[in-house]
Length: 273
Length: 247
Image (cartoon, rainbow over all chains, first blue to last red):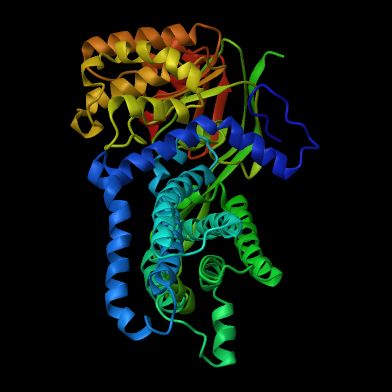
């Protein structure tokens, strides 16, 4: 048994309560880490901030120019269709890619002081989430320009946003733990995400695909997040309850596996850095 | 209760081998070909000691004796495989001062980050910041990015932030002297002030003179084993030196 700090730990405290208490005790560190990640991302330049919005827009333009020829006529609101895919994929890619290396990058901190190791991933995810929200604001601007009907149903988007954040956190936990043990995870992951990008129907539609293919796409959580966004913004429709359940299921699955890994390897990480 | 630190039969295993930094591909291949080598050994075993308020413990032993590993177990970074570590009160560890700073952040931002790492609150940091920056003598560099600072200046900031701590248990890993002559004097005075404020201190040092001057208890480690733990500091130092000469 170990006793840290002055307060005696309540023995019947549930793991969730404990996690919340520990997190709150380290809130100052969490805030400082988010600030640090933000400053490093934008390098304190006006252009840095602008660039984080401009670069996805440029990619959007390229995709629109190249693929608009093929799919633009059969898919209504093709720009918004593309943008839905892009905004989701970009957030996923940034949050998980950055999250994967976040633990390792802070090795010089957690090998010296006893802090909860998930804080580094949480801070990185918070920073990428803020970045995502900025781009999302631009996305809504595009929706208005493209004549998308706004309404209360847009509030539904809160669901995939929150669940995607949890999904990124969960997958980030898993990958950041693996990355400590296997440094080539970064290469493997970048190959995998490229595959995932083409397999998430960012610039094409799977409507005319055979049923068996569609089922494969349904197994891709990123595709499902993108589909949710499109359903609400472009179709103005309410996604099925099953759709909701699939998204939540993926997020909970990775959160669970990731938490177990962090708990199991908490003090073992030290040997590998 | 006056016992602040209590270790009973603590054993810590460490892993060595070629598992570090090999990739997943390499790991799989080595597992398949049976050439994967990872060895576990006891970095510390059977360590038992207790410290009260006001005690100052010196830990001596050659390189690789398990001193730093033991400190990591006390500060909670490593968990013992056997035995128990009981700690009552707030721990402050001044280990390897200059790592964990960010080169792109300014001096002020790094001071806050370090304060947060050490478990200060924002309010405490706001109040203490002026004292910290004055003590470090880096006021004119406040807004400069850290990469422009010399290593001595970095150590000075690290020490200044850490010295604001009001711990019950202070852990010192060979950091009694940092910076130039003038700062060294100042930092030693500051440390003595903290030490004499009634904390329990653990000092790892290779300087027997320093240990004899400061400590009232001594722990001698040799290859992870506890040779002696006693308050006969001078006696242990003598036997340790005799042991070194014989070896």
